[in-house]
Image 1 (spheres, one colour):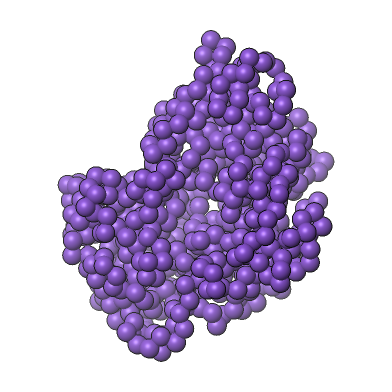
Image 2 (cartoon, rainbow, N blue to C red):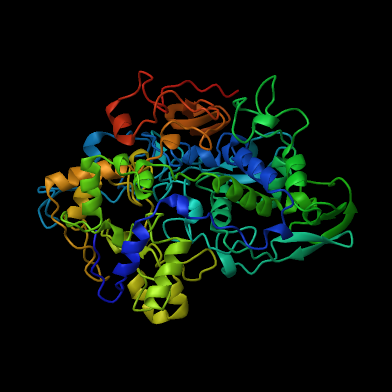
Amino acid sequence: MTYRFTVLLLCAAPFLDAQNLRSLKTVTVPQPGNLSQYVQDTQTLAVLGKALFWDMQAGSDGRTACASCHFHAGADHRLQNQLSGPAGSFTPDSTFSTAQFPFHQLSDPTNNGSRVVNDSPAIAGSMGMLRRIFKDILPGLPWEDATETADPLFNANGLNTRQATGRNAPSVINAAFNYRNFWDGRASNIFTGATPFGTSDKGANVVAVVNGHAQPQQVAITNSSLASQAVGPALSGVEMAYAGKTWPKMGKKMLALTPLALQNVAPDDSLLAQYVNPQGRGLAPGITYLTLVQAAFQPTYWNTIQLVDVNGIETGNTGTPQSLDEYTAAEYNFGLFWGLAIQAYESTLIADDSPYDRFQQGVTSALSSLEQQGLRAFNNGAGNGDCMSCHTGPELTLATYTGILNAGTVTGVGGRGGNNGIGVDTGFFRTGVRPISEDAGIGGLDGFGNPLSLAVIRNAAATSGVQGLFKTPGLRNVEFTGPYFHNGGQATLEQVVAFYSRGGDFPQGGVGNGIERRNLSAGNQQALVALMKAMSDDRVRYERAPFDHPELCVPNGSTGLVDGSFPLSSSDKWAGIPAVGRGGNSVPLQTFEELLAGTGSDGSRAHHMQDACTIP
């Protein structure tokens, strides 16, 4: 997938050729800077992170976890109630069908200038929360008090349905290598303890104990984009929270709860085994989120009897909070704990043992002849592919720490994929998936009104050059992470390869010429798909350690019946994702294409969405 950004892209072919002949095993997972200032036990930190990531109690409804959108090879392949977009562009609570894909359909799929048969600006996202306004926590309970309000967009037959996100959920597997996370890069490399936006956030987001007293403190932890990413969905009124919830409120709720209390955990879970409750659900009696926090984090961030208000200022009271608006230091600092713990867990989710990786280590038999043909096309050999212009290096994406470092040494300005010759938004490209007017990508603003683009921050004149650029994702395990692209508009890898072969769907739009039409032969398209499937790690395919996990119950569309507690809302249908231990499943994960076709509902695939939900 070659790019012709005449002012945006600098040539670095020698770097690409050298870098692509490596396995991911050769890359070290980046480590957060100054972590020891905050953390005293990194092993317990990862345990805490896994529990928080999979715990449905974390959601305001007591039923939504981070994993609810990242349970399937780190991504989400549900079919019903996954659409979002502008009003009128999608049907709420509808169920995907094969005929809907791709979202942009052409009379001649090889020619992006041919007649458009169908076009939809809808987005295949992930369903999150019903639209509600946070009132307060209910101490000791996993769900929270809220006021519901009619939702004019996510509404079917007069009842609110769960909202869906405005972009497709990317996989968290191998995300530890990304310099910035989210499609638009808004999860900064610098974690400030409460928001995704790095140094745009000037707040003192934690309290530190100094001479027994709690004092507000700023946080700036480098190499921590995963932590910055983790704190975004947790308070999002679309994804996991009732609108208006704060970190101290979440801390007050979660620190009193037994981790994973509603869910089964495999007794041989690769991280949680020694903590598992042998008599039932969750972790063992006596283990709370507070005890795990105290074991993982330095006492500076939790060990004081002084209480603080919502601004981190001491109230003058000590011991037990006198109201729900008074907090311990541990409650107040929960955003810091959440971000660093989930980052530690996600940093264990490294898929580096695919056939592709083994081939790059010299095992030539690891790839079939067809897959090797795909590799030649991928590397711009006889197949005319050149996919590695963006999917480069051992991580198979330029948007990584090593991509930025090496691209910077080649260009002298910080990397390829930059803007107006500045070159600092490394790994972000426009591929012509949708018109720029629908989504600015890294050309947008962060939560504090500042540009997401580093190029724009350094040179305001670059503003027009960054519109519609998105982060290049890695390709490992991509066969399980459909639907594809930031809008989820392609259902199969065959459709993805055809998209690149024709030069994208909206190649113009003010940012260079988009991607170059490759006119791949049918044989090379088949070979590229085979290669991408050879980039899957069998540990992911079968959910073996470290990709094993607790039980999860995910919403799977609406019933159309009134939720007894909230008369404006529909109740949910649910699907069970069974707990699996370090040995994994006996059958492989289902692909999105297979789910569309009903393949695997007989039990021959994992996560076929037909298992009963056993959550109390």
